[in-house]
Length: 517
Image (cartoon, rainbow, N blue to C red):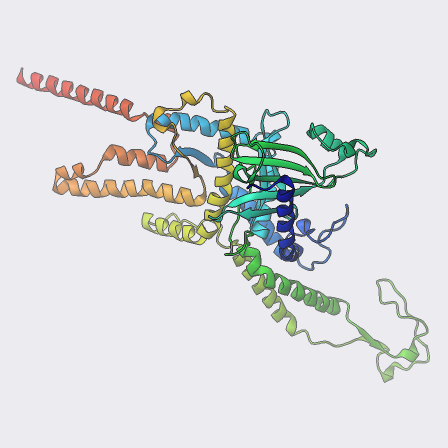
């Protein structure tokens, strides 16, 4: 028997209670690496300074650089292509490219909020190892709407396979917002005089199999519940999960992920803050050292600031010693402290992959083999960062967006889909430095194969028959990113090759006839 709506809300409250210890960890990570987001255990007032507790900004800068790298490296211009789980033929490539262009244009429209949501999500992903982004049609149902939510307000559960199954989000809309968003709401809402008064609510998305009501033959159910008044304002079936929750590094036994960057660098960050504080205090002592003097010789308090004047007893005999002098201190430890601080910063940079993200330098005198080996080394170093991003993050966003657009007819009639890919599963291909390195390696292998064939043909001309030149050349062109519209399909290629062979045969016949004449 499926649970009632009251029981579903109870499950959500239970998930929030069990997740309470995680908020302490997220608060600590936020304090050290993401102070703008470090409001998990308390509510920050408007205008409050974010990072007044930090002595060094380097850990925050490391997180900022990694978060910014994610979009610049993985979501550049035309950062994905739509494919299928079948071997795409040339006749289907044009439709797939059309679908890619349509989805890219709709996703990156200013009104969708895609850039804002993913920018916030990137920094949540870098700092906390996960992000929560919602995807739905906008209020007018005329376009997409992406929003990033605070991890503090969202809890979720996993299914048997370890995938995110049910999502619960707390939010506090105003009375005016409730009246504008929902047709049905509690009668108590009308009795509230202040339209800006906030009401505690919860948005729940669960599989339809776990809901006791009518889901309209949809796989998921979306529930908007007024917690304060115990009223369900909306319960509708939806075609997608609505929430995209990419997770970086998961740990067995927990549905919440970790950021390997901040977890590793957390102790180093604390140490950098302590070192910086000590070095600042030491530097201040050297610039404005403590003073030692003869107390009875002064007529008033010492004024050691710029332009200050301190009166000294005229009867004091300076042959007995200086009336005021700086206290001598040992400065030999300061360079060692600076070196230790620099070493800690290098370790933080390594933890955030900042030393691995730049492409390896390629010199003009390097051979093709050396270039290839350097690119392979770059792939090995950056794969732990980019692979989860492509599969968990970009993959989820693109797949959910494609399903929503397809359900609402954004790609035209389903009958326009080429027959050979109709009903096939969607598979996204992403453009990233790793993919570019791997795909461009195909072009390099084609050139190496060409050189080998030339050398083999000098020994035996029939060796050329070992290679399908047309297939390898087409694969190499796809690898270097040649647009599908530039390439003829297989039928057109065969017809053009047949015409060229006939023309060559005719020319040879004319030459033979001329020689015979």
